[in-house]
Image (cartoon, one colour):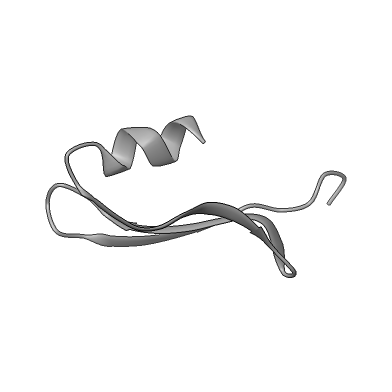
Length: 46
């Protein structure tokens, strides 16, 4: 989560980190340089 906050600082959050069926944490944002990011996390124990 700290990585997402750091990268999205002064950028645009398109989809906040949230739980989905395929990932316990997924988010989508554009950093301050205009680079789009999609972040997925793995379930514990994988």
